Amino acid sequence: MLKWILAASMLVAMPAISHAQDLKKGAKVFKKCKACHAVGPDAKNKIGPSLNGVVGAKAGVHDGYKYSKAMMDSGLTWDAATLDEYLTKPRAKVPGTKMIFAGLRKKADRDNLIAYLSTFAADGTTKEAAAAPTEASTKAAAATPAAAASEEERGS
Image (cartoon, rainbow, N blue to C red):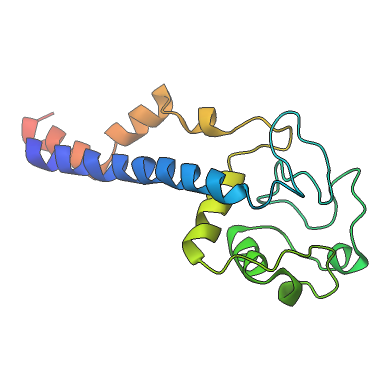
């Protein structure tokens, strides 16, 4: 039974390991965006808006940035799927956008960039600390079916 518990814990840990790799790759992809955009606590609007807190935000409403009418009227919310489509070909998704970037052809680059952007809260702080295991999440992990099965085998 111990083998099953170890296997289950490895499956739980694997997404965190690959997520860290995605963030590093996403930071590298973001270098293509840095000429026009910024992230982090000191991020300011440039040619394009700051991208702090962009994942999950409404399009065209970031304070202090003058968006195109097309972006303001788009009605988009920047969830992962919408960002993926937009980052593929921005002008195809939002005709009339001010963004002149041609897009990212590689799906992996878009996924990694979105993962990276999703780590920034609206104030520029990173959300990675919030993803760290807490006592509550550790207890929740212990309540998985594998843990429950091991308790049954012990006669608890």
